[in-house]
Length: 123
Image 1 (cartoon, one colour):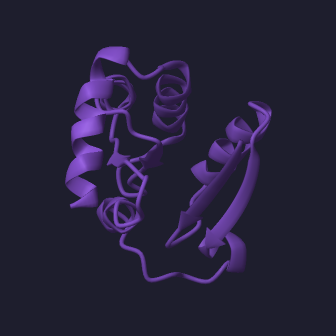
Image 2 (image 1 turned 30 degrees about the vertical axis):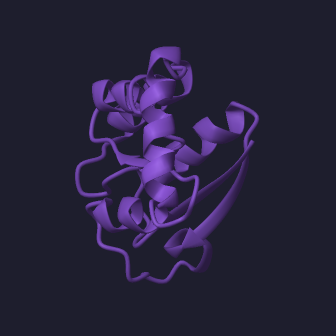
Image 3 (image 1 turned 90 degrees about the vertical axis):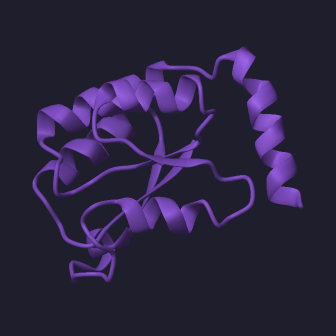
């Protein structure tokens, strides 16, 4: 899977995230400060990233600050984009969130809610 990773600033834990994604066989494309090594205009909370991503049809982004939120976002909310907060993240927490995100599949019961959301988006 191709995965885009961006940040407003470069933090030590970014290398852990990138290595984690690559070890899972993902093709990683860098954006923002991770690509240019210059600060970008995204705020460190992750809220703007999730909001911007959700403007794109078909994207269901969630800002996840812990592993349980990441699991629930995938399981019950059918999210397909993970936003993280640079302000709150540590290397250990990053690993926990990524493991929860990638090990959780969408609950088939949530497909009905997803279809309702798609109808709302299309109106």
